[in-house]
Length: 591
Image (cartoon, rainbow, N blue to C red; front, top):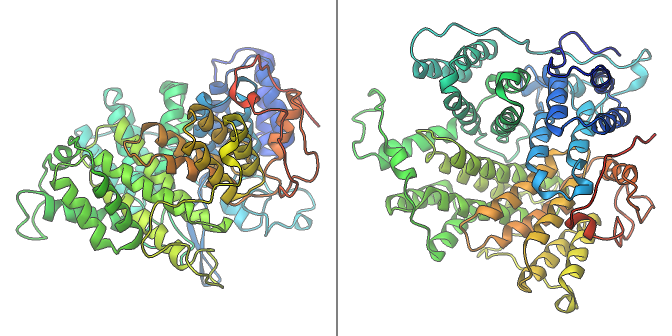
């Protein structure tokens, strides 16, 4: 299939004829949904010396028109059904963030996982209607109904031209956010593009773009299947990081892939509204005389955000327990009191992250990771937002993060297998402590390298409890942490067919490196458990195995790995290949 006309032309900066032909071939591979050919074309581009950033840019340029949906929900035969969020852009952003975690021989593996996935991620709307194959149509697509081949992906939101902004930049942002709130997709996108032309204020516009995603979070989980899951902020972060690396003057396709979706419904702002009411009525010095009074602009939120005092051990553990066990009023009041006592919003968020990690550590059934993993990624994205941008409403977002994690905790407490047909006993105890796993017999006699091998082996075998137990044994033994972090990152990257999942394991590693909490080891344990436990699709190791073969890395355990049922001693000869720099090279094509 020839690449559709809706795709932007290949960058003019690419002037080599052979390279342009390779990128045209990559486009056709993606539109044809041919994963094997797409990765082989990727390897050809790498052999030509093309950079990861350039390849990511052209990959986003190809999928940008086809990864939007008309709405993230649809009423089907009278039943409300969820319409999923795009993972192609998220995978591209994760590829950049994983660069510092990969050894030389595996430096291209995250990029390969992205290119492997993108052909399956186009036009989610029509996939869910069973009109074309892909990641989301595994249960509904019937190829026999399309004897001439599957339909081409559809463009649901066209690219637009910028509005002329009449008035100040700040008023223009206000108008844009109202258009987003009202669900005016095309109008809000045109307004955003008009604001983008003010080059001096681009970072402010990006801050508000991420903010618009962070305030849009569902207000319930039980008995729901339709959520925002924080995805709009995750995709906005990926766009910021991709645009920064590509260069914004050459990244319009990244903007097109991201900004329209912020206004696509449904949108939930009730959590943020609650945070605003707490700020106005409990933290502002001058309380409003009436709910009808005009909104006063103050710097109270920024004043609280500048606080730097850490939480005490007791304060942190108490807040964690409240988020996991209590109703909204309790942990909202606790956050408010901590802010009034001068505690740092970043330290409060670090405690929220530990609570989120404990939810992950309490999960046993793979489908049950669905919402808790998004809850954790929300806290990670919020921590990144705190570090990256100035914004007048950052402190309020703590309440949304705590509420998100509390929703996840209650979901796993009351429906631990995330199965509406059955209910099992909760794994949460009534007096929840930091989870402890039984150390494997003889683990105290193992060297650091032997423990790292056991961790890698347990994650590959999808043994959740063993993965966590060996990580805990490694931590208790006091071994250096950098090698552990690399093994956990590599474990996450091996798992393919939905690279959004590998991003979540990465989130916990990123936060471990910067957390102020003394309980940071729980983040490493949660990363291992998530990698072993999250929902897998098809043969989740297929791309990893193909990549290893393409790099002439000896693969062991050549049995049926589709469900990781074999006992895996080690998937490659030695974990040193994950830890130590190598000459590397570029992958070769495989049939």
